[in-house]
Image: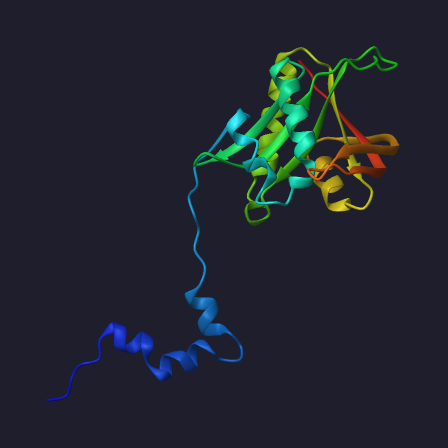
Length: 201
């Protein structure tokens, strides 16, 4: 008696494999792709997040910067706001409350830096929600506006901030430096736009 084909037989059959390898990819396109429902929470950075913020070596060179920022958060000068997914920081924005000179209009600015989202999770609205959460924190401290800088080599980021209401107000040049985990001093030249956004109360 002939044996009936099962689903497992069909998936492993040569015909099935051949269909998955069709030149136009139509079979693959039809079978692949699904949407994940992820619960992401915003919170302050904790000490046990510091290693994870290096993102498996991608930002290990910035270890000194990350730890210095955490110390400033402890002193109340800065907030390291994280997007948390199951205990792992998949996005961040650092809010710097260091006193800044008043603008010509008498406004006081806070600044944002180290804005980033883990690459596989970009274009999902996480960065925008992080920015809006940061704005609420700054508004709650009665600052008049937010400032940030964007590398001129990153026009995509500039468009992202423009979409959120930031406008170019000037340029930032010069350099910044930090010490790598191996003890080498790195000097990084700056070629940036300065962007600002008023925060009506």
